[in-house]
Length: 115
Image 1 (cartoon, rainbow, N blue to C red):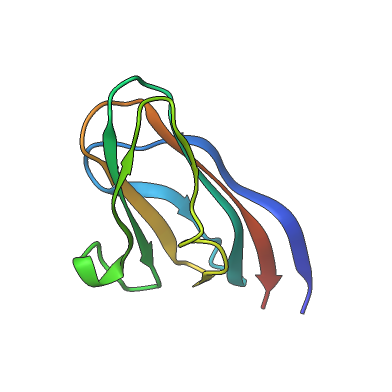
Image 2 (image 1 turned 135 degrees about the horizontal axis):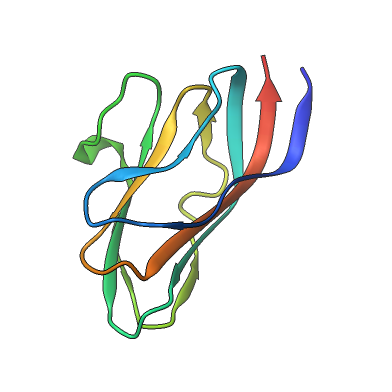
């Protein structure tokens, strides 16, 4: 099984106020292992973020929520230890939602594993 380390899944992806994908794992891969997951609030207002990990066929429901109501201060950068080490199968995705604004973004780096 071949691997590619240091693969950027997404860089600076803005989070919306409705749940949406911030990274989808290519279905040709066996899985993607998260090594770095950074959330940045570039605004000055407090923001609340929720992150969901969806394996193939999953939907955005509370049982798939990994990071729950994470409060970010204005100008805060957060390294999410909750997400590091999670494995997502090919075809799965990471979805996110923020309570307001367009000033929160996510960057995700990890290792791809071929089938």
